[in-house]
Length: 195
Image (cartoon, rainbow, N blue to C red; front, side, top):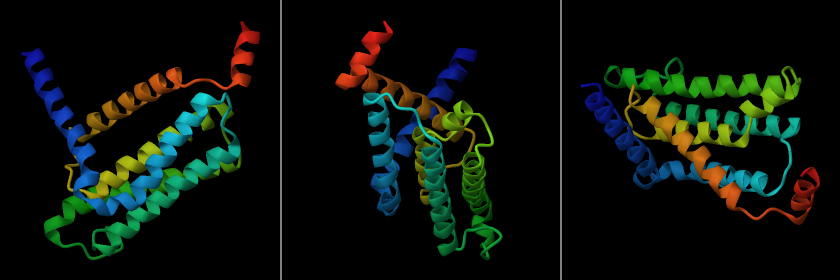
């Protein structure tokens, strides 16, 4: 019985992942913000795979600023459609979904402001700050929030594990790519000297 429930849940989660992947083709309006985010996500992950560099405080602030811009874009999108709860008059028919989407947009804005302040003032340890402000996490949060707000994907208990599984798959994908990416001559020398 438990295996059957797990199988059904995984099927629903995989269907939601496919639905998330298909949204940019269905709703092309989101491409204007998704393309820069996806480009930054892939290029920065490839860059840090090729070059052994540590994220700096300035990059942590910049990554949080990117998330802030995304959050403001989400608020503008919802505002233009009278779905930004607390700022527009939302019709009762869409109130539930407008609350969920507004909550996502507000969380993205608040999270980004919080991270900007933490990173700007070096308020936490470098390791922690650089971990939570990495380009992968910031851009992934931006991409997912754009897809959820611009589309009609259900924001429910299937979406959360789908988003988490998608993130895990993305981390594994970049780990494989970074492992296969040829290192620079300088990095190869450093690795030889460490051995």
